[in-house]
Length: 202
Image 1 (tube, helix red, strand yellow):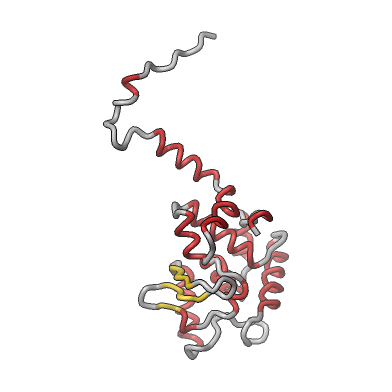
Image 2 (tube, one colour):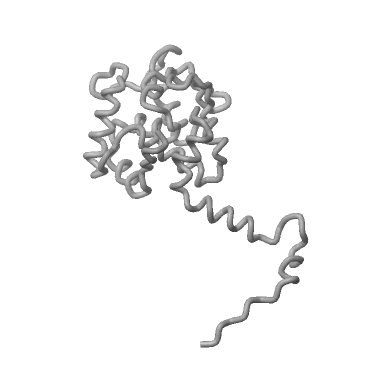
């Protein structure tokens, strides 16, 4: 719900989580670098990894939208290492409960992320905050709300109302583009028509 507002993790919080991630590394990286909802993360299967194009091909459960999420090199490395270690079948689930070795359920995912947050001293840690973090991170890196919406399987309206208000840098980037003299008119053309503002005398 856009009216609730996003809760992206800060750079400091992400650093603290990484320091104590331990056996939850794959869980952490999958959430961190894909923005998948908890329901999609725990039901992701190995056959949905596109190794050739280095991405995840997935029909989301909530909105039934086909998404393609590029794999971050860090996540790709850990996934490949896990695949070589486990030699899984195509239909096997990717995320396992480190405590039992069985497929991770959504309630257990929430429990493990909450426990990870407790170890790191990060309040209100839950899987959806990683989705918020991923969305804001992609906007910060220059992706348009349309691109982010396609990756997350969301609507552009949701991205613009739910996440964009957190990214002040987007406004500053727009300001720099507007104020730049690069464009249709030659550099110096506009400023030549207007005198420089006078400095106030103290």
